[in-house]
Image (cartoon, rainbow, N blue to C red; front, top):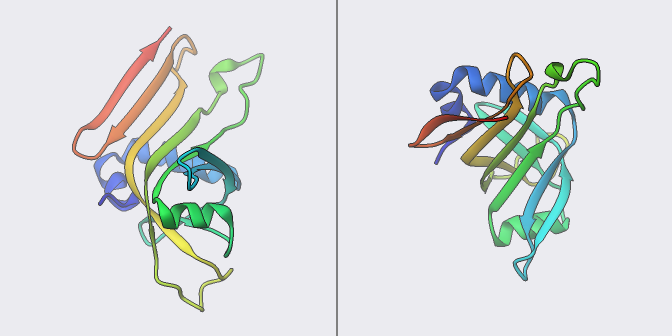
Length: 152
């Protein structure tokens, strides 16, 4: 299993930029699988806690039922739109995929509710290169490492 701290240790620079994007906004998008296998897209908040990327879910929510049935998820964190007069200032966006692992409940943790950490299978950071001429797609997978692809 690959926890956030392991990703940080393997790719400190990439993880710093990914964390900055995830921390820039409060709300993100989580994709889960419904009982029939079709996708469900829901809003979610994330936090970094003791070396983990943590997701909290409201009791009795549909996304909670989804992940308890099938732990596979995708997480998407958008950045702001690029300024029209300076597209190179776009900070990019982040996508992560993996399995959520439920933590034992702790009544001292607020707000209450089920919490999960993400067992990371993939991290993707999409942004413009420094000259704002190419789209760069950086990906990281446990065991495979960091790859950068460029598109014109």
